[in-house]
Structures are given as structure tokens and as C-alpha cells.
Image (cartoon, rainbow, N blue to C red; front, side, top):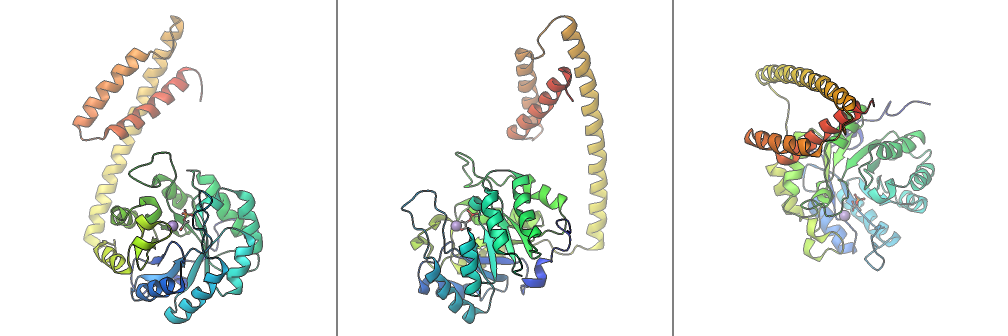
Length: 359
Ligand code: PEP
Ligand code: MN
């Protein structure tokens, strides 16, 4: 048994696009044959669009909401495929979906966030895909759990899926405004660090939840060198039965792509500058590590002293002073409050743990 992600097939081998960045585009849901065909036609004119996406079984939060047109829509997608000659990508949530998609010649599948959270469901889908050579995209689970995401990818890999990629669509959090789903970029970045060779796309539509923020998230994905985008596009977004606020017309998508700056190959000169800057960063990080270790040493001495005097390890008053003082100094230096608070909490947590004799 080969270990994940050995021999994962690069995206461009089965999903070529005429121009970067590679985009998988299409409506959140298939609503009517006319809507599917009109949207597909317009999208197929964009050289960056490498596949047409469309949801036909919609996992809805509450009953009574539009749940997709189901198998009937597969016929519309077959017609769209014959016309636009692009691979068609559909969400599957259970083995019967897989069977119907295969029967109707669907080219690619994606597993949605709500399904990825459940290893039983992912297993069933993976088993239904045993021996089927079809590309599969795996969205991140709704909760920020990197291992659960990796687990889902591994389950598909174990059944022989090699045209495998991940899609970052953000993580659900109560009141996560201004995002619909928090991007928490460090999670997909860690996925790429752990598994180089696994393509990772970004879905700015479900991260943003609105049209206004889409370009910003798409640009962040480009700056961070992700492998492509999945963007929801509807011929008449205002009439969409699902995710109306975040969908854009094919024309608007063309505009969004035009304005994206896609980091391409860089010149030798720029490369030298990059090398210099990186070595500066390396130096700074070395200093940071030294300072953190030095700080911890002093913390341990304080801990011993407190223990010998029978004092509590946590002195809230002192900690409050430290936080206020560092926040003031840090924000004066241009660092954000949010970042400083997270940093101070991480440092303090480690200090308390060490003082208490933990590792
Ligand atoms: C979708 O892509 O329309 C969808 C339902 O996505 P997610 O699973 O990321 O919510
Ligand atoms: Mn959607």
C-alpha cells in the first residue's frame, strides 16, 4: 500500500486551462435547464475556466430549504457538457450520488464540507469509488480540524483515487463576520507543508459569503500560491435559490479574474532580492527564538521563587499590567491588537505550563 500522497497526479494533467489561474466555476445549484446552460455557455468563454461546477443535491442546514433538483439535473449537465466541452464537477454526499454521477458521465466529484466531517460518510463514498478513475476534490470539514481533512483525503487515496485535491472553503464559527467562514489560512498552508504534491484550491465564495469580499479572498489565494480557485457563478445571481449573496455573473467573474495579480515566474534579480530578504527573516527568527528561550529561563526562575514563597503561579494583576503595556507598545509599533493578544496568550500559556513543571 502506497502512502498518501505518493503518486498524486498533478492537477494540470487532467484539468488543463488555457490561462492561469485555473478556475472551477459554476452555480451553487442547478435550478433549471435554462439556468445551467446559459451559465455554462458564458463561463466556457473564459480561458481560465477549466471545469464547470454545479450542485444538484444540496445539504441544507434546515428542512424546507431548496434541496437541489437531484437526478433530473444530471440530464441538464450532460447537455451542458456536450455543448461547452468542459469537465463537469458535481457534489456527492452518499454512494447513490456517486453511482448516478457515473451513470450520467460526470467527470469530477467534490465532497462537501458537511460530509467531510463524518468519516462514515466519507468511507462509504470512498468505497463506492473503488476502481473508478475520477478526480475528486475534498473540501475542508466545517470545523477547523486539519486531521479530519487529511483523514478524508486518505480514505479516498486508500481506495485508489490519485486525481485527488483539497479545497479550502473556510471554517464555520458562530458570528464569524465579516466572513461567512473564517479563512484561517494557516490550516491549508500546513496541509501543503505536510503534503507537498497535493493540489490545494481555494473557494473564495464560501469563505466570503458575499460578493464584495470575493476579489480580496481570491487575491489572497494567489499571493499564497494556491493551485486554483473554485468560484460560484450564476447567470442571474439575484434569482439564485441558494447562496444568492455570494454568486457573481460570468461577466463579473471575468472582471474579477482580470484584476487578479497572479504571481508568475520571477526574474533572477527579483530572486536575488528574495534570497536576501529571506536570509534577513531567518536571522530575525533566530533572534526571536533565542529571546523566547531566554524569557522562558527567567520565567522558570520566577516560578521557583514563587513556589518557595508559597505564592500562586498566576498573578492576574501583574499579567494585566504586562498585557496592557505590551499592547500599547506593540500597537505603537504597528502590530495589530488581535495578533498581540494571540501572541501574548501563547507565551503566557507556555510560561504557566513550564512553571507548573509541564513539558
Ligand atoms: C458548495 O460548494 O455549494 C457547497 C455546498 O460547499 P461547502 O460544502 O463548502 O459548503
Ligand atoms: Mn454554495
